[in-house]
Image (cartoon, rainbow, N blue to C red; front, side, top):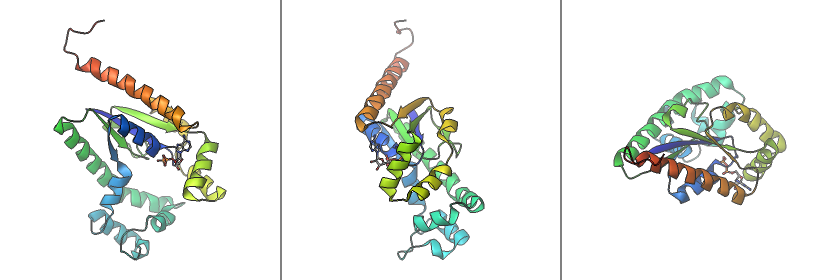
Length: 212
Ligand code: ADP
């Protein structure tokens, strides 16, 4: 099984690209969803978050209010490090076991691990290739404001708190430029996918049958 780690900044287009890859036949593991599942009451991560951040991060339904929690850690490096130390190891462990299950089932050709913090959380070693979704800062800002209904200032603060794109580029095997239209992005994704299918087919050829 070939494993792709799909990453990119906030509102860069990871979900958009991940849907395209799913349509092409990849199985997607969404780390954000894994984290949400692990943070649900009464999971251990839920308990540890409540113990560390108090009941004020819970909504009326006793589930974690991600917005309230986000506000507690945003611009507070110590609190963010504490939250990451609770959540990241568990998410990594669960993603790893999901990948192993998929691989052992023998049915999946390509798995995509969709992780916003793939690079920051040192998860690049879990995958065969890193595919980075890139957008210009202006486009990213514009899409973030539109999607999350942030003010320009709020959106800029979110972007500024993230690892810059330039630093992520050195980890990327493939870069998908999502600054243009969805159709242009799809063309790049299909191109990379076809390339990958070709590589996989070559790998699967029995020894001695390569025509080079
Ligand atoms: P991420 O998963 O990285 O946070 P999304 O895939 O949710 O990003 O994309 C962010 C927003 O931008 C969404 O509202 C999405 O519909 C929109 N979007 C993504 N790609 C494009 C594109 N190429 N053109 C226009 N809008 C886009």
